[in-house]
Image (cartoon, rainbow, N blue to C red):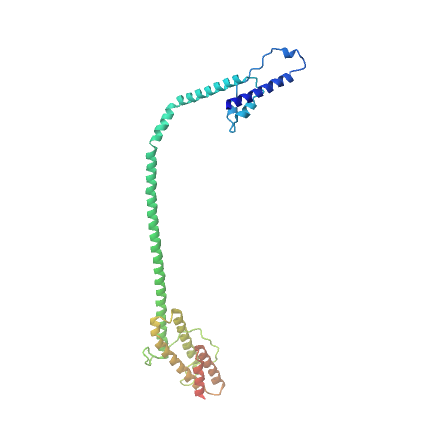
Length: 301
């Protein structure tokens, strides 16, 4: 069926080309009887068969100006096919040894692929081992860092506890109160300056009799408040600090007794006594003991 279709298409193209030659051959009727042979057709170009969208119908339609019979075209196509087969055979014969070598090189490829696969599996196992080691070391380092933070926190807590104990002992000595509640007979020496305000005009040298100097009372109050701040910062629920509550209570009571005595002694009507009374009430206020200050004032009256 295909051969019949090709034959019909080619014959149609051949007849159209013949009619064209007759129509445009010239007006001279003597030329129609000229027996001049038609030009010999050129060989079919190989490039015409190499197009990606090659179509036999389009190819035969492009041959309408080719002066060649259908049988001659078939014969030329057969010759071209035989030439291509011969070229292919010559190509195989010329490169036969290369084809054999290619087959031999491919024959041992499975072993090489297996070697590469085994090598990759070994490398993967090594990477997994290193990954496990790194993961274990990461967990270990994290644990050590947490332990280090915990130790640093305990060290800071221990230093704070030592500072609290040292300041409590120092304050007890200055108040002449022993840690067991006994009265200490040590003489009160020079004291640490806690940045006290020197706004009062009272001088320790002008304090009459056995009156406690106001600056000394103020420093005692500041030391006590500083220790209370250390308690709050460290955590009052600490067992050591819970045991120090009794010492803090004795210090507080001793300071309130000293303030009450000083307030009773400042009961004069002169300006010095009134100013001293106001300063003592300020110390009560700083300690948060305003109720005791009112009680002491009532006792003074």
